[in-house]
Length: 117
Image (cartoon, rainbow, N blue to C red; front, side, top):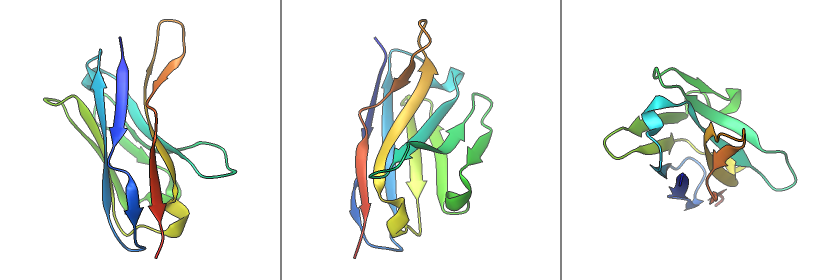
């Protein structure tokens, strides 16, 4: 059974930093493209950062230079380091894995990030 469990969310002041973790079980996440998405209130879910199985990264324009996606293969865990955070980064952040045999992607349950003074 594949499970993705996010942690590390919370309240942070503008300009502050936070690191999210996504613990993966049931698959070797290093073999797949993994990603972080987020969904702000009243908005559609959007892709924030992608890490491929060849360690290529890609970022949504508004987070380039501030967010870094990485993984620890030994821990089978995906990370999102967020620096210089802004109020517009406030959202529920989700970890996304590969699709199952039925074509449905694996998602974590989400972790709330709030940027506010």
